Amino acid sequence: MMTRCAFFLACLLAAASSSLTPLRAADPIPDDGKVGGFAIGTIVYTFDRFTLFEALEKTAQAGAKVVELSAKPHLSKEEPNVPFDYHASPEVIRQVQAKLAQCHLKAVAYAVIPFPAEEAEGRELFQFAKTMGLRAIITESPELLDRMEKLVKEFDIMIALHDHPRRPNDPSYRMWDPHYVLSLVKDRDPRMGACADTGHWVRSGLKPVECLRILKGRVVSSHLKDLNRMGLDAHDVPYGTGVSDIGGILDELKAQGFAGNLSIEYEYHWDNSLPEVAQCVGFVRGYGAAKQW
Image (cartoon, rainbow, N blue to C red; front, side, top):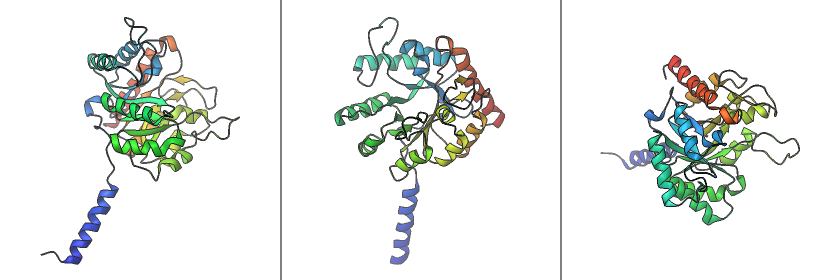
């Protein structure tokens, strides 16, 4: 029979173990949504010159199985005057869900970037994410983290803080610095972390692998980019042909047990980026196969 002292010790150990268990937001991305060991897809902004439905079709054509949604002014060629965002009507949401199914894509995140200033609108955003079955909301509004954290706990949807490049003329902008991002989330709900935009780190003169190590355990998702050079004037290139060390990034994410999505945000050759986007998916597929992930 367990003594009172032993029982008390067992309770303490159980509580400690529970506090160290990371919480899981929404459903884990299934293995059939992965390529080369990762949930690699696009953010629909990559195909900014096209309708949402065309962007989904191109994502599937590139060989991806997941997609990150964002606002699009045109739903489809058939309905060019119907926009899509988190204010979408139930009918528009049903159409998007049907198109995702047709393209064999799983929507996993939504890139809102500025978080809604009004509390009711923030709740609407989280409800939209829940309806769409999303894992995470990507944003860049550190001043609203208290409100976000309450909604994260209520809806079980993750928050990922995105980084843009450093701004030489605006020292108050600090999201480019992974140390700063970590300081914002390290004491908050474990479902709050970073959307690691590797390209913007390169534009800021940082090495992505080192940035990922700083954020270890808090990387929710990534806008994975390879750039032709360091600096603010750099542009996207197919994975493995630039300076970002994509292989090293994938190795580090795998070592960290990263379970989020990698979004190709290709901001170059806007009218005909599909071949290069497909090359990016192909790199991850081949790299993962070589590593036997």
